[in-house]
Image 1: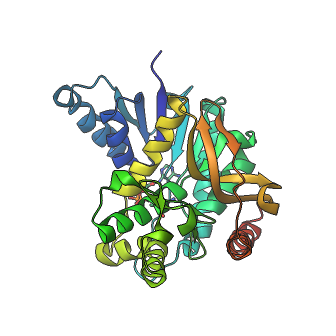
Image 2: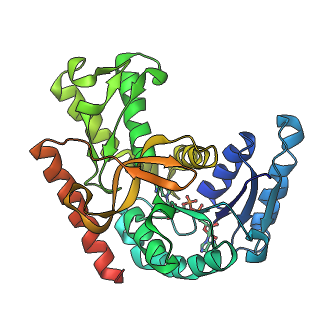
Length: 308
Ligand SMILES: NC(=O)c1ccc[n+]([C@@H]2O[C@H](COP(=O)([O-])OP(=O)(O)OC[C@H]3O[C@@H](n4cnc5c(N)ncnc54)[C@H](O)[C@@H]3O)[C@@H](O)[C@H]2O)c1
């Protein structure tokens, strides 16, 4: 049986994610949105690219949740993106209302699916989806760390003039100004970057990573990044559908890990067929732990505003 992936929200992130996923033949893709015609048009256009790409992914655009029935994975990208001068947190109330609209319908039609939330503010929206869905915690995952780590990896590779394939990086914490890049656990061909670069250089790259989303928003002016975000969620979908047991930084609902209770925070997760199959508790220095706690506090403040 082919796998079925629904993407809620057919805007920049949603449609580009559909493109990556169909091109990788991860499964059949259903695009859904509330703007009449947009998901149908983008879905059909993408379907017509498949003969050229030699891929048998079926792509369908729709406004009807019946077409999403029995999806294996549902990626939620519905919501407004940032404009220049806005923080991700400014999106909270609008996107929470959208989450309330979307998650119930998704759950009714795909009760056994795994949800991956992309909408911002990421950690709070993942928490909302978790609470509204009633799903077990392994089946609700937030996408942020894969993107933030990819940005850090790109900057490290550029700085050192090495292949991006050689670079691994970890960024933990919430998807916001308090994210916690971990240079000690970031490597080039297995060598920690702390051995390869001056502290001041690492600090510059860390800051650029923190500001990575805002840097793109400043250029685009009318919206936020979507190529790297959609590639990031595609990596997560692939890890789950192929049961790869891949260790990726994801927003997960913590129940005591890292001393954090009842909150979505970015941590290293093992992704496989059951969604989050394990949360890795890596050893952190006091300083890194304090940064993670600060990040968790920022998430806590947001979720308390919408009461999830
Ligand atoms: N987690 C991350 O790292 C990350 C990265 C990039 C973007 N984002 C977030 O993803 C979201 C989408 O970004 P985008 O650039 O694709 O925005 P976009 O405006 O291009 O697309 C959003 C789409 O959602 C649709 N939508 C709104 N309400 C809906 C509903 N109730 N049901 C179905 N669809 C609905 C809109 O019609 C629109 O087509 C934003 O909240 C953005 O901040 C998160």
